[in-house]
Length: 248
Picture 1 (cartoon, rainbow, N blue to C red):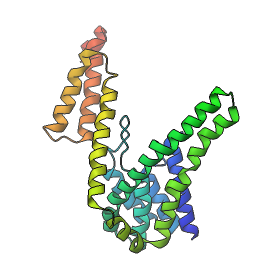
Picture 2 (cartoon, rainbow, N blue to C red; picture 1 turned 135 degrees about the vertical axis):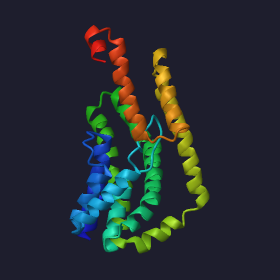
Picture 3 (cartoon, one colour; picture 1 turned 180 degrees about the vertical axis):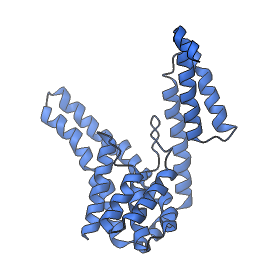
Picture 4 (spheres, rainbow, N blue to C red; picture 1 turned 45 degrees about the vertical axis):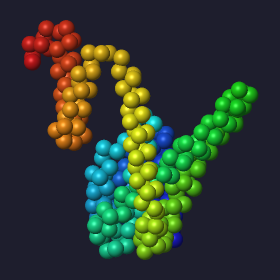
């Protein structure tokens, strides 16, 4: 009971951190060892945390896209692995479906609950109600205890034998629909970000990155390294500094 509560509180804090100060405690590489420490198996927590971190390394918010939730996946998957005697395979098998459930929860929270609080905040702002504005910002953070803390508590307390059948009972059409919808939202979000790229001479770099990713199959890490390299080259060649060009 105590361990389940502590893990639920950690996941709640992780989501609050993600939505506020962002010191990265929400990442699986940190969540895994913390959950392992709470359950008395730091080694398994570190292994599972690193594994889930690699699985969701390139999963980030892009515009309005809501990605699968790595924090929920890491916490519950680590607990399942510890209960199974340190078998990381259990974590790998459960991480993705749990992350997809987290994606649904996040979509509901951001699209409905937080929007409602935002409208309350706008009303309080028009009336000059500072206390109301403060609550309109703080209460949504507290809702993470219900959206993420409670499911984590139930999953850890009852274990994989009770949770996995519920996950498997989710209709495949619903999961596929969420995946397609998430992809479409991601495309819209990415288009919004691209609309801020007002300098036309930078577009060739975007085309290069798209070509490397889509046609050559280079992963996000390789594209990122290439992007950093091109950024340094672009700065060196366009800065107008003779000494920099000579260094090249």
